[in-house]
Image (cartoon, rainbow, N blue to C red; front, top):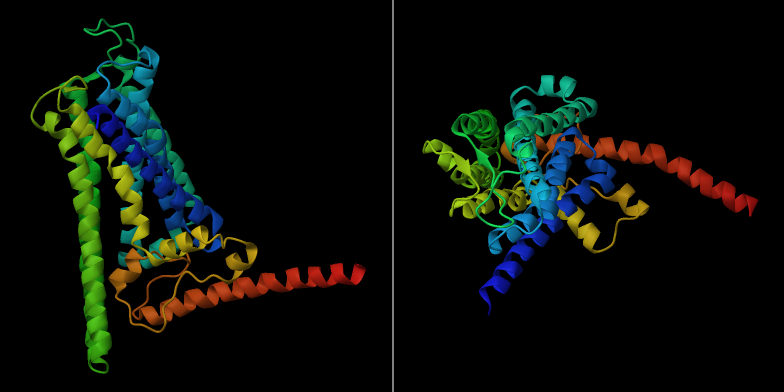
Amino acid sequence: INKTALLYTLLTSVSLLTVLLNSLVVFSISHFRQLHTPTNTLLQSLAVSDLGMGLLVMPIEGLRYIETCWLLGKIMCALSFYIFYCLISSSLGHMVLISIDRYLTICDPLLHSSRVTLTNVKICICLCWACSITYNGLILMDNLGNLDRPSSCTGECVVVINYIAGTVDLLMTFVGPCTVMVVLYIKVFVVALSQARVIQSQVAATDARAALTARKSQRKAARTLGILIAVFLMCFCPYFYPVLAGQDTSTNTSYYPILCWIEIMNACLNPLIYALFYPWFRKAIKLIFTLRTGLKVLMNVNFLQCSGKTVSPLTVLLQHHTDPRQQPQAHSFSFCHRVIDFFLIVIKSETPKKSKHKVMRSHTW
C-alpha cells in the first residue's frame, strides 16, 4: 500500500471520528430538553470547539503533514494557524470552566446553586470565545501582517513565534489552565472522597453488599478523574516542549507535525472523557441511533436510572446532574429521586395541555 494513501486514510478516519463523536454530543444536548443544564451547556460548547477541530483543522494539518509544500496560498496559511490556535485556546478555556463548575458542585453547592445559572454560563462561554479570538490575534499579529515574507519553497507555509511570545503563550494556554484544573480536581477528589467515606461507614453497618458497590464506584470515579488529567497533560505537554527547552516555536521543524497532531488528538478524546463515560450520554446515543427522538420519547425518557442504588458522591459528580437546581446530598438515592420527581412534575404540567388540545380537535372533527 502506498505510504501517502495510508496516511491520508488514517488522518481522514481520525478527522471523521472526531466530527462524529462531537456531533453526537452537540445533537444529544440540544435535542433532549432534560439535558439543557448549565454544565451540559459547557460540554456542548466544548464539543462545538472540538467539532471545528475535526472539520477545519485536522484536514488542513493532514494536508500540511503529508504534502511537501503548502498548496492553499498565503492567506489560507495564516488563517489556518489562526483558526487552529483559536479552537485550541477555546477548548482549553472550556475545560477550565468545566473544572470550576465541578468544583463548585461538590465543594460549594450553595454558591453553585445561586451563581451557576444558564445565563451566567452563556456569558462565560461568550467571553471564552471572545478572549480566544482576541488573544490569538495578538500572538499571531506579526505572522498575519507579513504574508509576503520570502520562503525557501514555493508554497511554503511557516509560522514563527519568538521566545517571548512563546513564553507568554506557554503561561496563558498551558501552565495557567493546567494548574487550575489539577488543583481544582484534587480538591474535588479529596472532598468527595471524604463524603463517600462517611456514607460508606453508615452503609457498611447495615448492608455489606451496598458498601462494596460504593467502594467500586469510588475507584471508578477516581480512575475517571485520573484519566481526564493524564490525557490533558499527555496531549499538551509535548507541544510546548520547544518553549520549555528555550527555543523559538517554528512550524518548519521536523518534529512539529508530530507534536501538533498529539495536541489535536485531544479534540477526539474530549467527547470520550467528558461525555461518553456518563450514562445520560450513552442513553442519548442509543435513542439517536434507534431513531427514537420524537416528542413521545422526549417526554418519557429518564436519563437518571438510580434503581435505589447507593451511589458514591464521586460518581454523582462525574455523571453530571441533569437538574441544574439540585445539589448533591449526603445520600445520592434521595438526590436521584428528587431529580426524577422534578422532571415528572414538568412532564405532568405540560401533558394536560396537549391532551386537551387533541380532544378539542377531535370534537371539532
